[in-house]
Amino acid sequence: MEDIFRAIEEIAIKIDNAIKTADLGYNDSENSSGESQLKLDVQSDIIIQEALSKISSVKSIVSEEKEDILTLNDGGEYIVCYDPLDGSSLVDVNLSVGSIFGIYKDTLDGNGLVASSYVVYGPRIELVVCKKGEKPLLYRYKANRFEKIGEITLKNRGKLNAPGGTQQNWSPIHKGFIDTLFQEGYRLRYSGGMVPDLHQILLKGGGLFSYPATSDKPNGKLRQLFEVLPFSLIYEMANGAAINDKGMRLLELSPTFIHDTSPCFFGSNDEIKSLKKAYGAR
Ligand code: AFP
Image (cartoon, rainbow, N blue to C red; front, side):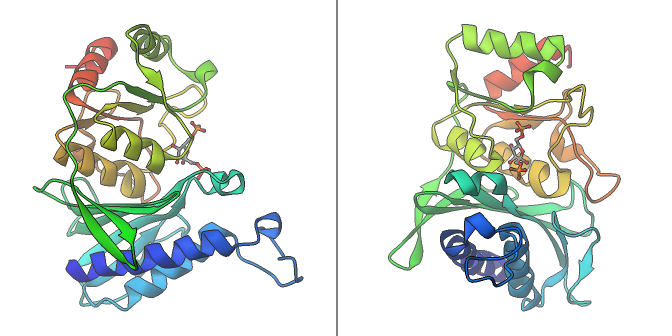
């Protein structure tokens, strides 16, 4: 798996460069010189596919940008599921975005997830790598290399609240719970990018990120294979928790198709316990 992590480092530098040099005003069709230019999320997908196809242990890939699974190396053992540029609509307004990777073996579900990684493209490039059974590790790009900063551990209780979705479409239970957190003094921290929002909670010690079932999206918005499951592993390994609206561990999920979504809640243990109580889950 180490070769996959090295590839993710190379990918991170290339995507960061694409973000910094893309001609945003003409991103959908043509650049300022009249040349056609691919959207940044498509460019990022191509960068990742090229890098992973050179790695013999990668059997196939599943991308947020592709309809179907793509086989790369018949003899490989890992399936890499990724969102090449999550939150790409935030690039135009110069907010942080990210790439998310789930590395699966044997089955495409929480049981088969053996490692996760994500990259934050912000004022600096940061990378988090997490193997099942081990603490997530934070790296920061500095002087042409990724320098290890240390392990990530959540406190049992935090102070940040990142509530996703449109409030108008929340259930009364969800609205009541989010209101209670604010009444208890939690601070709103929501950029609309899953990667920087979850990263902030991890690095600032804790809190809650939620993307519930809503009246317009009864199965949530976030995709299981390349958003929900990779972050669930990272939160659990960082001493936190990740559940759905029935109180089930998200890592027990088995998607029914590759782009399947799920309501999801990631946080420190105390917030997740209170959430379960509010939702009437065990
Ligand atoms: P985009 O990739 O379309 O910007 O969506 C980002 C995202 O998938 C995820 O990164 C956010 O957490 C979530 O959507 C935000 O959705 P809401 O705007 O509905 O809260």
